[in-house]
Image (tube, rainbow, N blue to C red; front, side, top):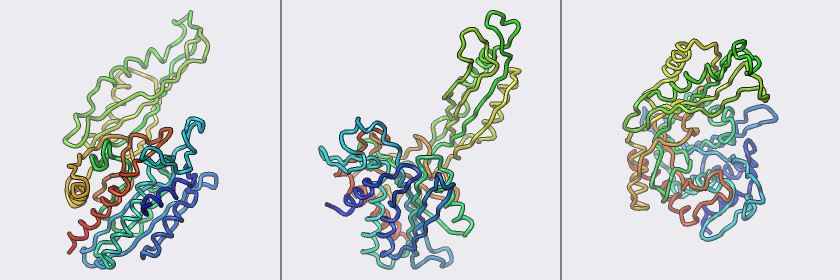
Amino acid sequence: MTRALHLTEQLISRRSVTPDDAQCQQIIGNRLTPLGFACETIESGPAEFRVTNLWAKRRGRLEGKAGAGRTLVFAGHTDVVPTGPLEQWTSDPFTPSHRDGKLFGRGAADMKTSIAAFVVAAEEFLAAHPDPALSLAMLITSDEEGPAVDGTVVVCEQLKARGERLDYCIVGEPSSVERVGDMIKNGRRGSMSGKLTVKGVQGHIAYPQLAKNPIHLALPALAEMATIEWDWGNDFFQPTSWQISNIHGGTGAGNVIPGTVVVDFNFRYSTESTPEGLQKLTHEVLDRRGLDYQLDWVVGGLPFLTTPGELVGAIQNAIRAETGIETELSTTGGTSDGRFISRICPQVIEFGPINASIHKIDEHVRVADIEPLKNIYRRTLENLEAALK
C-alpha cells in the first residue's frame, strides 16, 4: 500500500460530516510538523457549530528577500456531506473499502484523496529539496460543504490582516472528468441569490375583483427576466445565468387568492457582470412592472479567474509529464473556497480526482489514480521551484 493510499484511508475512516473535523486535521498536522511546518489551529463559529481550520506553513529560504520568495498553498476541506440512506451503500461509508479497483467511502473523491496526495507530495518534494526556495503552506477547513462562513474565509481574513503573502494556490476539488488531469478549473463564476416577495391582496378566489393576485402580477416580470441576456460571457466564462429555484405562494386552500408570493432565484455570473449591475437591472424590470415588492440579496461569492501564467503552466506541464494529457481549462460548475482565497492570492486553480461520484451513494476514486494525482502535485512543486532558481 502506498503512503498516499494509506493516508486517504485514514482520513475516510473519520466521520467528519460538516462541521466536525473528527481529528482529520490532527492527522495531517502530525505528518507536516516533522517536515518543518508550523501548524496553527484556528477555530471559529458558535459552540453548536464549531469549525476547525488548519493553517500550516513552511518558509522557503527566499521568503522575505525583496520579493524573491514565492508561496504555494494547497487548500482543501476535511468535512464531507451526509451519507444519505446507509442501507443504500454497498459498504459502510466510513469504512474504506476496495472493489473493482476502486476505493469507496464518503469523501473519497471530495476531497480526502486530494488532501492525502497534498501531504505525500510535500513529503516527497522536501525529501528531494530539503532547503527549497519555495515556501509551502496548507489551508484545510471543516466548513466547506456547509455554510462556509467560519472556514476558509475566516483564515483568509486573518492572513490578510497579518500581511501574509500568498502567490499560488491549488484547491484540491475534484476537477477531472474522465481521466485524472483532463480538466483543471482556472476560475469560477460568481454566485448571487435573491429572495423576492411580491405583495398582493388576499381574497376569495370567486371574487378576484376584491383581491389582487401576486402570482399573476409577478409572472410577467419573471418571464421577462428568464429571457434577458445578462451578458455574453468571454473566452473563459459562459454567459451569466439566471434561474428560479423555488416559488412559494398560497395558503394551501383551493379557494383563496394568496396575499404574497415568494420567489427564490440565483445568478451564476461571469466576470463580464457585477453584483451591482445585475441588481440594478433586476430592480428596473420589477419597477417597470409596477410591483409592490421586497427583494433581499445575498452575494455568495465573487467570480475569479487565473489566466495562463506561472501556476497554470506549472501544473499543465506536470500533468503532461505524468499522464501525457493536454489538460483543458474550465470555469464551469459551482462555487468553491477558491472564491475566498482569490481575494488574497493572485493565482488560484482547482485540480483533483474524477468528480463523477461526488456527494453520491458509493462515492469512490480509482485506486490507480491516487499515485498520478500525488505525482502531479509534486511535479508542480518541482516546476515552481525550478522557476525560482
